[in-house]
Image 1 (spheres, rainbow, N blue to C red):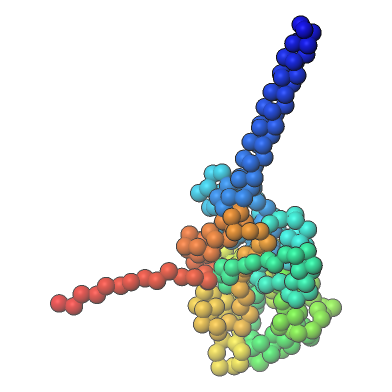
Image 2 (image 1 turned 90 degrees about the horizontal axis):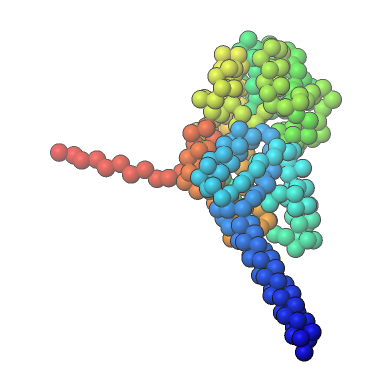
Length: 312
């Protein structure tokens, strides 16, 4: 009897220990599950297009500062890499200046994913030149000729050869230029820099260069990069015809007068009660939209302002 009673005590002790471990494991499981699926807590990887780097990083910094239980990390990628990252679960949200194309939608559909998105801002493909350049404005047709043949005429009608340079190889700006502006394949005389900063540096030191970059890099007049180059380069004004030319800025995006305007989207494939949704809602909400406005992009949603006038 003593041996049997001892065995019973041992068995009960083992069972209790196992139950404690199971309950602890369940507790950890549900805690992590809650943290990973809260709109304001957990961890989130966001892939974004390099052209939007300054804006997305600022949005991430502000979100993390407001929500201390959230850890959002941003990763600079090309558009194709960002889409692949979302498809292969390397990230839960992406930010880029276009929506998924039909081929990409089919790929996600094959995995029973239907990515959701929010339009959060508007930017544009900007053409920059040195302040010493004779170019000031071009029509869309003249930009197409520049892309095809590497030459353009100044305001006096004098034609000159120009070096066409892009922010980076395989960038969204390069793809947009080829697909939507030129509507053809890239020409052999196009050159690509390692990134946008290198493209800006090249243009400021070469009067015969025309750089194609995302306007978002130089949209913020308070940013150090803008201040360092404001006397070295300028934006070309672009016109659909020869009657109206406009450089890229918030007003020309709003009025639709800048031909190379693009919309910025946050795209996710997670559910509604997730950190990806929380980040998307923040960027599309009042604080995120005000941040875009202050940094020189056109927010997708602008708050109404009421002005009360008293006439006596």
